[in-house]
Structure formats: structure tokens, C-alpha cells
Image 1 (cartoon, rainbow, N blue to C red):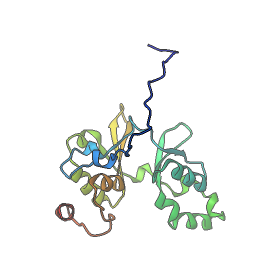
Image 2 (cartoon, rainbow, N blue to C red):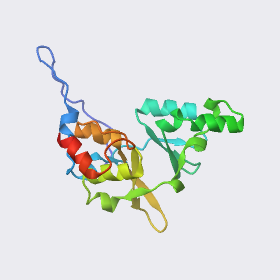
Image 3 (tube, rainbow, N blue to C red):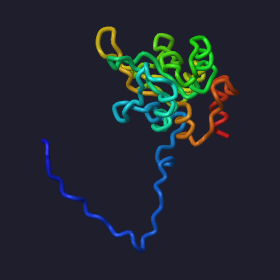
Image 4 (spheres, one colour):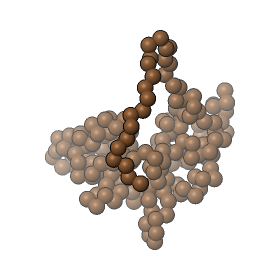
Length: 198
């Protein structure tokens, strides 16, 4: 039912009240054995941060900063996902190398020239995530050597829908513990578990 008229909500006076800020981190705290869904950014709940592959990298990097994310899905003209780009892609040596090869300024390099194409990536299936725990997600990110993992669900013959994203930074924040970069320390699940238990 569509309504055109809404009544304003009642408002409370704040004079004389002590107000604290809600502690979101404490409410969203997870453990290694928490369900993996607790740390997945569900793209049915939060709109995906995306950018057109034709956009130059400087504009895309500004869009990334404005959204407060470190990963953008890269789309083509028909809004199909063709890859992803991270903050590390913008700040690494790839843009400089592409600029030199093509005779461009670094800011003129296109997103599609520095992104990781979908064809070079792997993803986790939603049906596996539904049975997994946070520790499984950490182990998966470690094995891949990446800070992010895409979660897909079937969308018909030969098609998939990107349903979610795992971020090592977000997981660390929700665990309340710093996690070393994928290339550092923690070579196996037991080491991760020991570091978090300490």
C-alpha cells in the first residue's frame, strides 16, 4: 500500500538528559565460531559501491573515499560486473606502469586498466557461507592472499549474482582484534586462533 501522507514522530526534549553514543562495535562483536554471515556485507541490505570501468582512476578513487570503502565493483555499460578495484590498486605501481606504457598522466588511467578482472578471481558460494563460521572466512582470505572475497549466488543458467563481500578489515573490527595482513604471520588457522585467544 502506497501512502502520500505521514505524521511526524513525537520528539523528546534533550535538556537535562545525559546522552551517550551507542557502541555499535560492541553490539556487532563476533568470535571465530560466529556464523560467517555476521561478517558479510550483504548487498541486499547495503547497496554495492560500484564504478564504471571507463571512469578515470582519480575520480574513482575520490568516489571510493566518499563512500568510505576500500573496494569498488567495476561495471560495464550494461551494469554487468567485470572486475573489482581496491584502494591498493590505485596506490600501487600498476597505475604508473599503465601510464608509462600508454603515454598518459597517472590520473588519466582508466579504472578498467588497473582493476582485477572477474575472470582472474574466485568467489565463495552463498550456500557454503550459510554453513561456515568466521574462522573459515579468515582462512579463505589468508589462502587467497587477498583482503576481500566476493560471495555469489546462482541466478539462472550460466549466471551468478554477487550477493556479498567479505573484508579482512571489517572482520578484524568486528572481532575487536587486529589481524595481520594476508602476507604476514598467521600461516594456518591454528595460529590465527591462538593470536585471537591471547
